[in-house]
Image 1 (cartoon, rainbow, N blue to C red):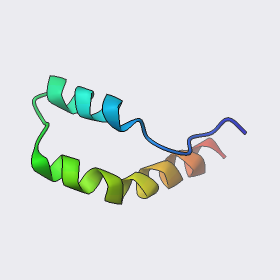
Image 2: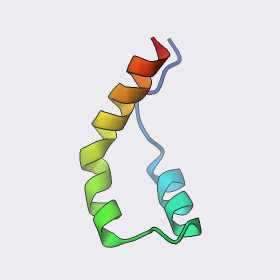
Image 3: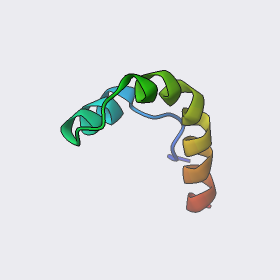
Image 4: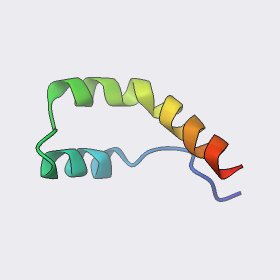
Length: 46
């Protein structure tokens, strides 16, 4: 209960922009890799 279930895309994109890493590849792939990242957070919290 209370674990990760989604990413805040706005926060991810703002962080990437602040780091100079914002590009179209990240924007296009973020929805595809979101489930992988969320599963990894769930696995680590168990």
